Image (tube, rainbow, N blue to C red; front, side, top):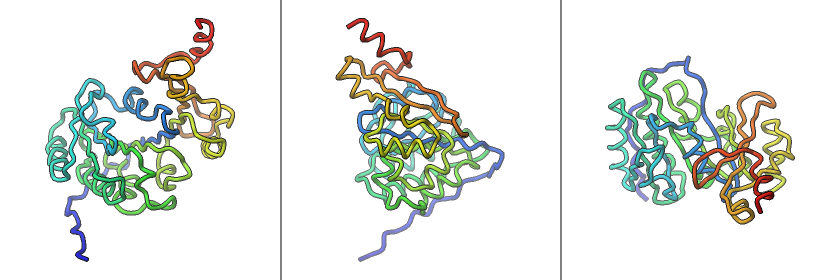
Length: 260
């Protein structure tokens, strides 16, 4: 069998070790509101230069913070658009739609994002959906994706990874990401894992309500979440209406019962 040709892409430019580590993870079960958090929590702003690994086309062809996301199935077209966009200073939103959820596709995306980083230019927001489905290991993440997670910070790259269970992703992801968003999980085992990892009471994690659950019970797709920053016990609770994109008060359930 012929060996697949490797991409001959440049390395990032202008290392800046003074840049802060800003990687994020968003963890939660199906229907918990993870993608809605990416779209509406505004950590990726309207003015950002952003690129998405978008296997389910959650972003491609849709508005993101008021800007249309351009989606590409072709590797060549995606890479050409990304390189051209990074040559300027304007905001952009570009998505790569992989042909399959396999590590080779994620590696291409990571190599492309890694190649256009520059510590003297505007930061590049890099969002990876369904990382656990593409990763071959829950240990140390190798290849370009591992290099991206470990090295992007000093070249202005900010990586947001989205997945369902923390136990299933490489430790490289969780150890390199100081900011976590916890959404509703599927089991007490998942809640206990996150509690141990981030020193958040397991009862608070288990009590999170998913957008899917709230849609069924109160007819509002409201997703609970816990925002955790680096440091023991440094967290805040929140809730987001996935339809309107607006944050709502944590008393929404009590108010819904009163109005029922």
